[in-house]
Length: 153
Ligand SMILES: *[C@@H]1O[C@H](CO)[C@@H](O)[C@H](O)[C@H]1NC(C)=O
Ligand SMILES: *[C@@H]1O[C@H](CO)[C@@H](O)[C@H](O)[C@H]1NC(C)=O
Image 1: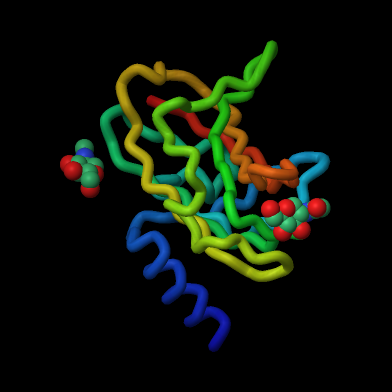
Image 2: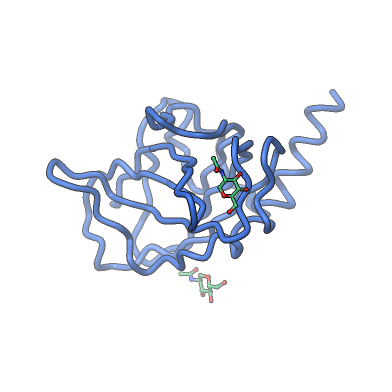
């Protein structure tokens, strides 16, 4: 019970979102150097069915999770990519300074919180995306990485 209450309070502080749903069908990257858990995406009513979160154009969304990295970093860099058949395309309008989304420095072997507040512009296109999240150390490139599914409708 205490754990549940802490989780809910933590989520409210992190995401301040009433519509966030816990997403379970995310995948860690093969060579990731972290654990990721308690992933909440807002909005994502489809999470109940393990389907891609549906986001509408011109709307605000959020992605919140806990992570525990095998590495520390004073200068962590982040990026979201759309995975395509040929290559991964970065979402260029997202600031790559990870300290905007988590406490810095990133601490090795410690549970930390991550929060993205994202605006979905019109120019992404109404399509299905496998989105890859990554945060890495600017100096030695140790990386925390996972993928999840988004459909812009
Ligand atoms: C998205 O959030 C920003 C910043 O909080 C706000 O100014 C804007 O009105 C919001 N847009 C929509 C469509 O809700
Ligand atoms: C990578 O660099 C960071 C600091 O920039 C350090 O904390 C971490 O231990 C380094 N990792 C490895 C594997 O060298």
